Length: 299
Image (tube, rainbow, N blue to C red):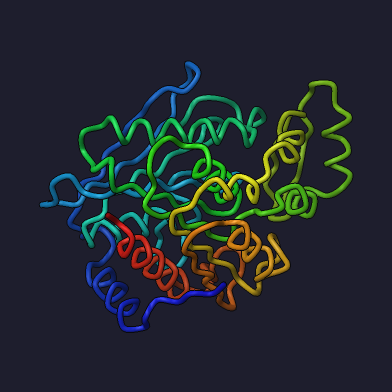
């Protein structure tokens, strides 16, 4: 099932979004926080100027990421920060959060689990609905990579009505993807540990530590099963050059196959970070297409 937006609508949305240069967006950003299990979750809320009770998008970052996400070298701007700015230019508010154990939120990264991130995502929707600053009847969600796994699960479990969900390079088989990223020996060590954190050197050189709960949760949450509980519009973006979540587009299509509702599969010759190291062209196309899809389905 592959549905595509009319090209004119996509180009129109993207052109409007790109009309304002970085740093000049007509929107107000502020830092917010709320608690989950007695721990603080920190986020950035972007509210478009002159829009009363705007619709809102919740953004969920990927593994080892943060709420601004990967910085695009050519733009000196994080992918999520850029998306929030561009969507605000079109009258859509957003909240991007640091999961607990990441960024500015409480907790050590070693205690990260998918289940904890799902709790944070659900709580973030509760926070938005109670904030009084956005329209709680026009909410959407965007999740990237592991954040896509979390996003699919949040979409299936939340009591709030989401008008649209967009999953970017989502980990539809997270255990397989993480085995590739971490290596089979690390996975075995994680399961063999009786509680101590396992030290890991990631393919891009970063050094982290992860406790056994992280490894166990990779097998206890299935985003394909979770997304079957969500029946509103679903947008899935995948890249044929993705060497982290693959094969593509099959790994994205499976989420649409088990989703009962309108869907779009957005496929481009892009890597796991949407060719961000080559410039902004593909990133901006993805942000524009996502914004157009969500805007079309806001009640």
